[in-house]
Structure formats: C-alpha cells, structure tokens
Length: 120
Image (cartoon, rainbow, N blue to C red; front, side, top):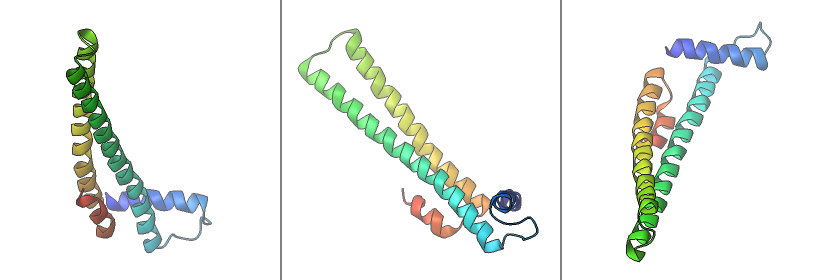
C-alpha cells in the first residue's frame, strides 16, 4: 500500500514539477508522503480541539441556564441537546485521530511525524 501511495505521489509530483523522464528520488517521495499525512493529522487534531472547545462552551451555557433557571422548557432542552451533540462530536473526533495515526503507521509515515501526534 505504501508503494502504491508513493507511486501516486511520485506521479503527481512528476507531472507538476519535473519532466517525465526524470524519476523522483525516494527521499523526495517520502517527504511528499509525510507532507500529505501531516496535513491530514493536523486537520484531525484541529477538529478534535474545535469539538472540545464547542463542548466546553455548550456546557457553560447549560450551567448558566441551570443556575439562572432560564431558559425553561423547550429552550433549555435545546441547550441540553447541543451539549449531547457536542459530546458525540468530541467522541468521534477523539476516536478518529488514533485511527488515522494507525493508518499512517501502516502506510509508512516517518516516526518523527507520528510522534508529534501520538501523545495527544
């Protein structure tokens, strides 16, 4: 699978940057692979951070509503639904990052890049 991905990245790089007769060096192919995965991993980490931020703000809104006893009825239930939806988004985002890391590891992304995201 890594070879196939490297071949695709090499073809893309060769089509856009280098003449067709010149092969792309292996080091450059690995660098392109790492760049592509860095973008994917960074996006997953950003989505997780955004989901956590949204959950915190929704939970604060619910705490304020409970403390003030306002809003009531359907409006408060809507705030509670927002909190539940934010919890689900966070759980999904937290699950996606380790799965993406495992996929990157199988493809052969450098361990230096993976280390940046493994502790998260």
